[in-house]
Length: 258
Image 1: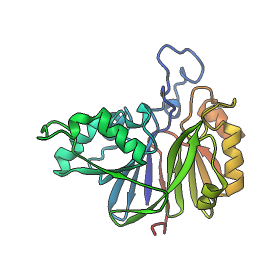
Image 2: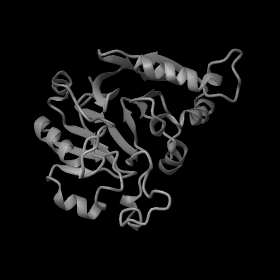
Image 3: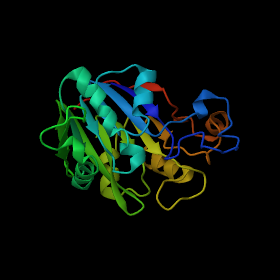
């Protein structure tokens, strides 16, 4: 199983337009962050988590042309604004692409991208098959995906576990029942917005507390804002098994599926 970080930034990305802080002015490529998204290759399948506004740019950078299914954490635009770019993959693959998300999120997609679902189908619109998910594990082309229900402030969002890998972004609180689903992980990806606490996102300290409770073999931080230190400073203060993810990073997890 291979996981590639397409983007690791918060909703504004890094650098922010017009910002002169040390993080936004850093020349280190690891401090340049598109909006958060990952691309997973497993069992001959290619899964995308969150088609954000930088999907086209990330696909060109990484050179991938196949998306077999899309998992969506929630409906905020930094996680869904790239849905129209799915049509490029429709052209290449010559078929519709299934989307999996909470019913509230699939309803929002159907409303906000109504032209993709109109009849007769406009040939220039993305071809999407919406699959509402619940709380139980579900099958994505032979891969078992377990939803992890978290709260983004008061908004329910969905993390995903595939084997011993889990991806959680835009979380502030995780209930004990969902923490139980995250036991025995090899690799955890979790959001850490900034040093200071935030009403809807985990701070760095809060993310480290969750990592400490779950004890995965390794963890990566994502959905990072410019209020987190630059990469070279951040790695100096993190535990040995925790690293800040960066755009273009690929990690490998063995023996994970089902």
